[in-house]
Length: 435
Image 1 (tube, rainbow, N blue to C red):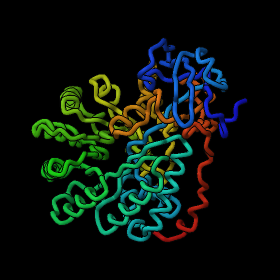
Image 2 (image 1 turned 45 degrees about the horizontal axis):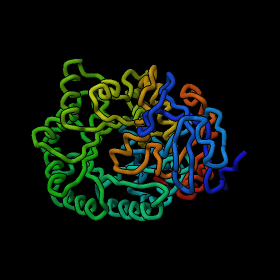
Image 3 (image 1 turned 60 degrees about the vertical axis):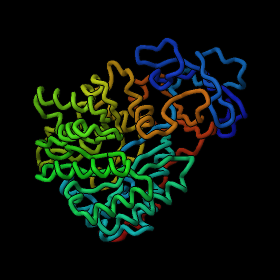
């Protein structure tokens, strides 16, 4: 069998199955799950040709995948790499949102040195890289004196990982914090220096409208994109509707991505329709973080949760709103688990939000759709694109979603990489520090 760790200069991945939504330039029949049977010819570090299975007989040696699934490089559009992997020293005492806030705030104050953030950040990127991710957007806590340190580490990591994992950063601040002119000006300076996006998290507050107005004003003045946490923790939250109305009133032309939007799921039908119509008209994109929100929401001692953490992805997609799913937190007080593995994220999202029967174009939610919003060349299989691929023995989406995908082969530039994630023990010396 052809060795993918040291392949020839040109070869063919034969008899692959690929979601049709991720092969936009190739026409052909798809099966009931939306998969196409293809041959994929690689030359050097690029995809040279894509054609129906069994037709690329003259493009070099063949590796017969026997109908195995192939995906392009994956794109994780909402993460928190500055706070990841602190669980051992800063566990959430009760699994609640409030418990997470307290634990993270204490750990930040005690431990977030440049070395600490840098080592955990790099650990997270190695996890993502091993799992087949090629681009990540991370939110960085940007309130208080640690903000400059976090952005310094981000800049270092972006350069060190360039060509392997493309990084974008979002300056995350509380919506009430933008009322402080000096602090907000400092945040804007950081974003402009590092090419970051303007972010915030909204909650029920009398200052929500004024805070959003300041965000829009700054985004318009400095040409910044917006990436906001919206209506995550408050059932009565209506930040999404307010944001959409303000974007329309201002004729805002910059990109807007909103994460979470959990409160929408408990609104009445009329309010849902009004809100989603405005979101679609305003051109807002949405990312759901189902694993983190399932972990946090509606936790009460001795009581099974009723409110679960998924926004209305089906209804949004039906209106043409671009929708995505992403990792969010990993092994920190906001989510005790996770490994920056988008295959796990998609598998759980498909089960939680019923992204099946039919599967349709839902695989684009971890690939083509976030890549398009981020403006990175990833997420699709196309001739001339980088040969950054993940190969799975699963012959259908059903098989792929039924078992943890630990036996994947990840190609970067057409060569198989080591897919062993880093050992948790690497961070043991950091975890011994008190929170």
